[in-house]
Length: 235
Image 1 (cartoon, helix red, strand yellow):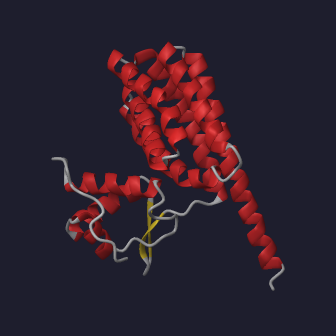
Image 2 (cartoon, helix red, strand yellow; image 1 turned 180 degrees about the horizontal axis):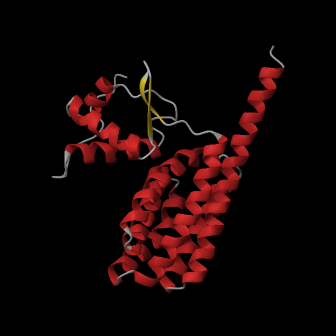
């Protein structure tokens, strides 16, 4: 990897935490693919920090299940099989649904105002066709949801699940109309959260997660079946 510095340290938080946050975002945005090897030297060049800080960040991500260390090969981005993807969406539905209920019940006025602003932004960034801005808006939506729900234990688990779900997003949106459908579901979900309706927020969350799961898992099954067919019928 010959890329120049990609990330920039900008806060007073420990370097380990900043580097880990940068890598989570890079994983979510598809900068590193599942199964890709993570070379310490390249990560040092990208972040401008020492190998010690990179190693500490990788250990943190490994504890979250986002990185796996293999003998000889070293750290890699955790692979995502069909079974793992099924488990991720199942877990996401449970955790995110509970967080939705808690947001509807606990969110402070500043959380509701911030969420309202993000929901209002969805149509604009979608129509502009700016994928990065759309991803930014979705990330802010979930960050506000997590903050407003005010449950640090659930937040830790849901954040790592969201990173892996975002890795699968590029697969899911390959299905026709999924991106537009996803956005419509998130707007309805946001409206339920803002209304403080716990039951409706939970149902909207389940609909959105189920739609995302259906799109991504269908593509993964197609790919898996194609791989089986090729192995059974080699050219």
